[in-house]
Amino acid sequence: MAKDILVAIICDDYFSRNWMSLLTVRDWRTRVVAEVDDPFQLTDLRSDNYQKIDLVLLDLDHLREPAQLFQILWQRLKKLSPAKVLCVASRTDPRTFSYIKEESFAGYLQKDEISSSLGWALSFAAEGKQVYTPSALQACFEANFSPCKPYIVLQARPIPGLTPRQSETARLAIIFSIGRRDLADELTISEQWSYGMVSELYDKLGLPDLFTSKETPYSFINEDPVIKARLDDILEQLGNSKKARDLESLAFHLITMPVIIEDRS
Image (cartoon, rainbow, N blue to C red; front, side):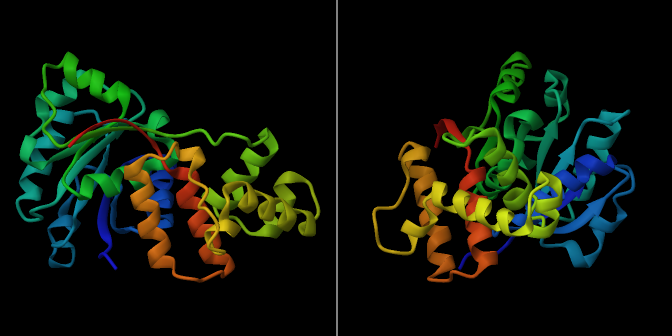
């Protein structure tokens, strides 16, 4: 089994930090090892405990002095080598690329475009690819910044075939992993009915077929070979477990798989 991808989050906004932390923790492949609220107080990242950080996830939304931040960050990364920085923002800004050091840059993601697929983006970045969403790549070109190969362009994938009610159930029960009783309260249904709705989602995703040697249900990922290989790896790690928590985690990875718009390997 591959080692965990160790991630440090730098973000001074409570809700954004929780969003990134939740998606990173929920993914089997990634682990949060540090969260820094104030981007100018990075002393924790210099301690011996965090020498093995693989990626720094940097939220750019509330930065008042980005030039100073990046200067401090590149200094800290000298002690965290070979950690790289993956930037996220609500709106991409071409000026960001003027602060970038290519050897320590893992990519740039627009939040609404990557959405719940953040863990997948981190996984690709940990392999050495620069990762972008479409708007971020456009900002890259506007800044006359040439993305280094290999790079990949990702976008969150809508789940076909789900009703609005099922999509909301998937968001609460699978992505946010809230308990069935709380799910029932949120959806104003009985607790028993909430279990049935989650089971129906598992059927829609084809989870029963994954454990019965039937043809695996890759149709909704358009047989994309890169994502299919990732899913095969996840299934191999899972083994034959059918525990509720394992099924929920596998469903999380299926639901959050992104569209690969461009792969320049």
